[in-house]
Length: 233
Image (cartoon, rainbow, N blue to C red; front, side, top):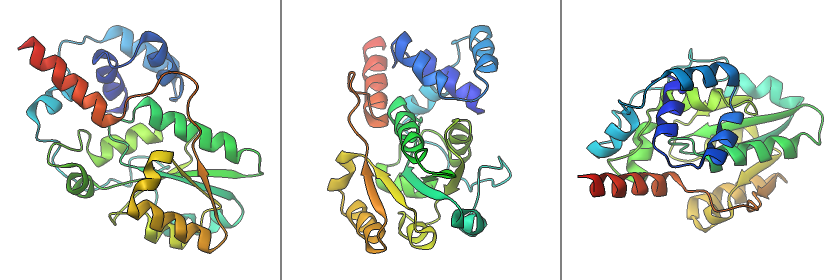
């Protein structure tokens, strides 16, 4: 699925209010083209809903580095990293919900107080997400997730993780800032990642809470869709 098809399916899942979806759409590139596509397409066949209903997730595949100039490897950033103030966000980014994109946007705005800000997103492989989240995940395969992230305006580069965590990338790139949600800090691996960043005097920046209503996580979005489908049967 292309990014515009995924966004269409997410719209038709009705997990966002019209106001929330308008905000969501506003973070992506080519908004006019996306808007025309959304207006022209039908919600009769929702691939995301079908995958969630099947409960089997997506078939794990390898990342396609030709997908976009934003998709890169660690060593390709070493030269550019030297002249930049580098920030990193990380996660599964499955369905790339509003909270994910709001966090990315906050990170880029935070970095913009410095000259040459560079925001890099790290995302887990399909196999590692399945190990972490169970056989029903991810809903979107690695290339679909990469396509979605690459279409977010504020993200400069995306690195598909070969390892089950961020430690290798953090050790190599030594970002100036590592952005995490407050709830993530309870995870042991996240504490290790933060400790590594702090060991070379990098800084941890915790996302502030949004002033409006809580945004559903991917797990909660999937749960609400499954609950609705059960009522419809």
